Length: 131
Image (tube, rainbow, N blue to C red; front, side, top):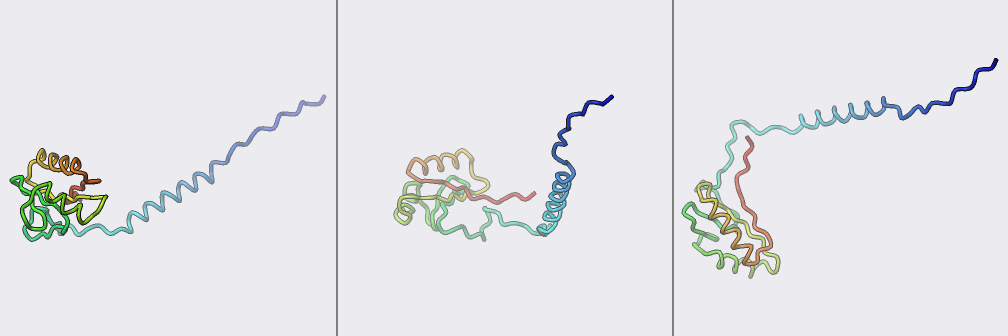
């Protein structure tokens, strides 16, 4: 008596090549992470309230007491924006450099006032924490 033929089974996709690719990607990212050299642990980054730090020339500096200065002279938000818009044209991007000890509410109020005056963007310049 003849046995009936069994239907052919789908073998599906082989998983071994997929495992090999994932393993190679893992090795690649481990090696790539080791290539970037870490910062020297004794390196101390400049702080924004350092007197020796020279701010970017187009940054509006917010002092600890809430006063503003632009290019070394005391100013108001409207005056600084007027100078930047005269030099920058339609798209005015303002850089705001706050003192670390300045009030956060004052900083937000200054940024809001600059945006309402017509600034296309307000960038707050800070020290990046690498810890």
